[in-house]
Image (cartoon, rainbow, N blue to C red; front, side):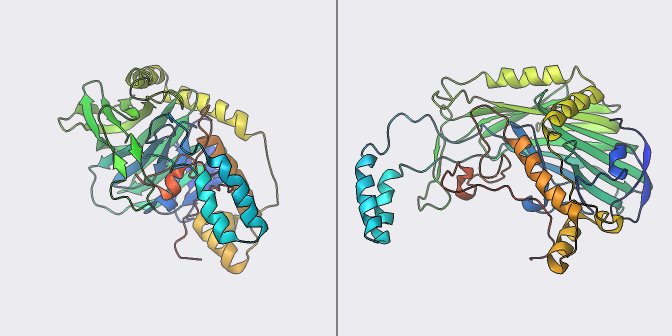
Length: 419
């Protein structure tokens, strides 16, 4: 795929403009795309990318881009050192007897003897924000898009006659998330890393922002009545190191005392982001027997920055296509007048008016595959209840591995009204 200047029609159908980053597939009838005409306001509306280990939730803001970050190995807790319910087997005959006599209240009470303790909580990694020092003029021809056939997301809009665009992808071969920003006019932006975990942030003259911290060594689910649900100790729990580096820019990059970076007078810039945790297996103490996570994160950035953006993208596409292109489905064609509408509008019409839209059905099917490829490629660490995308310290049902029900990944359809 070549990224080049081209003419494209905005998905809203109202604006024709010169694009800086969008590939030809955007305007060539590729229907495997979620596309919207406004930024996301809520987690459920945002677009998601991931390489099976690290992922990002993309809001596509205009004055500020927010990427919520996750690492699938960042959990609270420590290795299990004892059997929490050693006599659980004794309760099984009692449970069976209660069920046989139809005493379901007793069976429900007895089954608690075999449950063990609560699971730990999956944790959000942090937030990457890119704040633009721009004029307050209204944006034109806004588009936010996720192309699941390539696992690449885009944000594009015009302001005062100039285009501003970003592209995003999570590379499995290079273990980085790549963000490229292009503008027809020079722009200035501030790049920050933050985290809900105890952490320290620093910026360096080589264009890096680093965030280092740790998760709680023990936690309880949100639905419990314990007052203290998160227990922290600087010497316990899973550690993490997040690095964001600005590379290949025609502007100036300055490290600030508050741990942020300033990108000045740039028309083109690429950001590389990675993270590593000390998780070293289910049976090893992440604080005492963990991986050298800081060194690992630094090595990933060092390897990735040796490649050009085009090389990073080509390697990502080759890897992703080898999985995604194993399955195709064709349920028919949707008229262009319908498929060009934002995805949330298409879904509402499909629901409210039973509008025939086979392309939307194909997208729904393939989106499930996209999500699983993007969140479940780390050996020994499967996808959790939210794949790998989570912004809550105490997520619903702890984002745990619930084996008595079938977990579902819900399509981000960006509904504006309840249905």
